[in-house]
Image: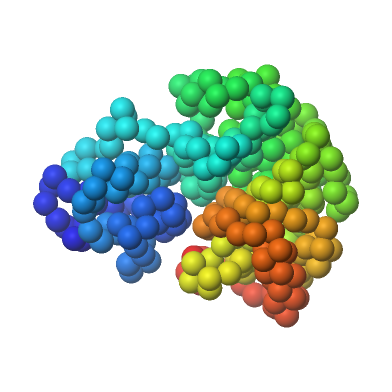
Length: 295
């Protein structure tokens, strides 16, 4: 069923920016058609109905509608548990181009927020209800919006790399250079200049990799990919960063800002990361082209 179905059905309005979030959360129900998301059939089960509600509450343009209305606030699933230790924040922000953000639970009971959802004091209270948030970790400048607001609300430290400091000049902790930095027990920051000058990935417990926009799981490729067409700083620098970093890290969960998530054995992901570094090293700089991005 398409977007022009009966008024009572689910649809996507014309504000959609093709950020891919809805397709991640409601696969089989939402697909890319003519450069944006579209509801391709109506839900048939409670699980599918919940999936569309999740997509609607994540959508940064609030484009996913149920008839003439937005989704039922009582059915907001966020923060949504992905694993024992990671929640997806949802409520993606138009000021981060609709990027995903996450909450990481630590053994002491505290949480870290990786990138930020849209700012809202009610949302902040929902996230804080899971546990005290001690750190807000920004992966790069494009996702820095709301960082100070959330850090202040939580009484948390705000982290960013010096290369992107202009996006969060009042950060509490500034990462420097290109060498890994341990920022908490089991959590390390790996500077990865390329997408932006100050891009960083955060690794937790050799299990979770929060990659920002440096790389993601591409459904069209069936593999880890770089967003070559929207690499703002330097694809050459990104290749060098991956060549340096890929041998150093191991993880089982790839959790990007944009693009799909993936859970695979660590050995397989390590192999794929080595291959990604090699492929990226063969790329040449080219103009930014949003339309060339393949999810």
